[in-house]
Length: 140
Image (cartoon, rainbow, N blue to C red; front, side):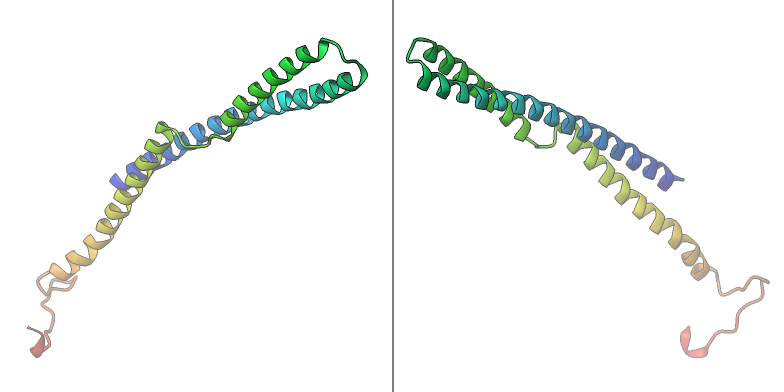
């Protein structure tokens, strides 16, 4: 019975770990999409800046370069957030609980499997009918 409870605990810990991991991966994907949007804006503004630099040599270029720099910084921030992938505290704790529960369940299962074998060995030489077994002389 204890091993079943430990296996249930291990399953709950694994489900929690998977839920937290999926949430983290979802945040990474959202940050990556935002970074991609701003990176596309950087490329579009770089094209527009090059075109304006060639077409007109007026004051609109510094404004475009400033906007380009801001978009580049925002894209870099979201790119770094998307690249971070370390498991959080809850994910690590759930993994630890799952491992401990599985180890304890293995130990309890091994113990429960060993009990019938040990009790058979501890019976005082009697078979199921209650009669004494014949012993081999050199095995006393």
